[in-house]
Every structure is written in structure tokens, then in C-alpha cells.
Length: 342
Ligand code: AFP
Image (cartoon, rainbow, N blue to C red; front, side):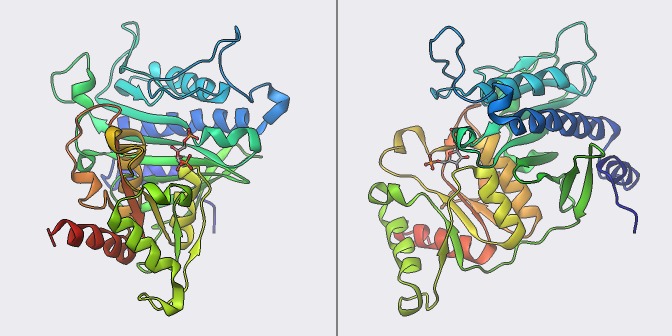
């Protein structure tokens, strides 16, 4: 059978009425930008792109208060530049920038809002571990010509499309626009993304979990109890052994789950309680929740479905539980029972 390129897949989706021409162009542009990011990341030390941003010896800090890597800044610029002039966007927002970026007046404007985390897991770059880009697309409210942060604050259920690209041994794009989750692998010789899995399905049950165990002492009681039961293995209440993985690049951890099942947890803990969680709702939790749900998985905060949260800020953080449906349900019920709401 002839391989299907991303472009062919998007044409097919347009014909089926799943996306319109503008959204198709948007996805194409993001995918093209991600190919450039893949080239930049793959150069490693040879490209002079490793290490921290800040050319004059001062440390560059992003809106999240985190130190920026050079590749964070480069990837952000690649995505902004690629998306400015195509006429498919009303504005975009990045994890790396305080406020939304407007489309310059000299360029045509479209009806979509794009949000992205240009380089997730960037603290892994210098040690040559997979990193990724995450993106999410919303409709710009009618009549709004200069979208502000408030116009982006739509629940995840309103997303028109979401995707991630993992820059690993292979560069892989995983995409949804609400009609299943699909995987494309970059054919580096040809320079195009090729469909490698259509309608990916995440097994409902699993025996593999991902969590940063070093935070265990700070977790809330239900999380302590739940993970304790997984660690107890065959002789514990769950009656089976569980394996653990933690890449510390959400994209890579989620990609493992999308490939062979599993669950990913970044729960609330005493250290991050004040900020609401570790991961960002708009740039990480919502797009990953959409992708995982469309693959038959589930995504919750431990207490409620992520995609139903009403966002309160562009850079809001939330707890994240996602992956194999039955296991996310066990962990969520554990919290709801402890709260007395289940
Ligand atoms: P960086 O982009 O700063 O490396 O953060 C990555 C991340 O947001 C997410 O991709 C990981 O799952 C998580 O943080 C890792 O957190 P720990 O540092 O607690 O392992």
C-alpha cells in the first residue's frame, strides 16, 4: 500500500468535513515548523544550541519563572515566525510568553487561536533525551479582532485540534481534531510526515505507571495510598505487579502511553499546591487530554475531567492524571472517596 503523507491525510479530512481549509493549513504550518525544530534539536552540541539562553552572561527566565534553554527560545521563534503570515491565525499564545502574540497588521488574519509549548522537557536536551512540542487550537470568538488572554480561556472541550511532536530516535507527530488520534513519522530523507498509525487505541488496563517518585513525601494522602498499593504488587490489594517509567519529558511519557498504554501522574503536592499543580492547563494538560481521550484513554485532575475545567489564566497549572482509562478511574476514585464525594 502507498504511504499516506500528512498532506494527503489532511485533504482526506477536509473532504470528510472533519476540518476546514484554514485548520488544515494551520496544522500543515505547525508540522513544517516542527520539522525545523527537529533539525535544530538533532544538531546537538554541533549546532551551538545546547545550554542556557542569555547571551550576555545573564540568565534568561520565562513567564513561568523557569530558566530558558537556548532551544526553548529558538523553538518559540520558529513557531511564531512560521505562523505569523499564513492568514490562518487570529493570535497565538506560548508557554514561553506572558501575553498572547498578535498577528502583525501587514499580514492577513484567520479565525483560529494557537497555543503551544515550543519545547517541552527542555531540561532533558543537554543529556540527549527526547523532548517535544505540544500544541492546541481553538476557535477565535466571533467579532474579536485583537484576541486577548481572556479569549483563549476556553475549556479543553472546545479544542478544534491538538497534537504533539516528539523529537526522539524518530520524529513523530501525534494529532487529533476530534475524529480519533493518528500518528505520523517523519521520513527524514523525503522531508514529510507519513501516516504510521491511524486511530491509535490506548489499552484500557495497564500495569505501568509514570510518576516522579522523589515527590512522594509531599503528596496528598490519597495519592500516597494509591501508589503504595501499586508498589505492593502481587501480594498487595491490586494483586498484580506494576512497572514504573519516568522520562521527565511529558511528550515522551505520553507517547509511550499512546503506544503501549500506561498512566502518567503529576499530582498536587505540598510543594506545588499554591500554584495549583506543576503542568500547564492550556499548553500541556488540555492538548494531551484531548489526544488521550480520542485514543480511548482518560484524563483527570484526580477529581474532575481535565477538558471540562474552566480556565482562569493563560498560564494556569493543574494536577494531571492521564492514560489507560480503567487505571485513571481507580486513581480518581481514590481521591473522590477520600474527599467524601464518591
Ligand atoms: P521542562 O520543560 O522544564 O524540562 O519541564 C518538563 C515538564 O513540564 C514535563 O514535560 C515533565 O513531565 C515534568 O516537567 C517533569 O517534572 P520533574 O522535574 O518533576 O521530573
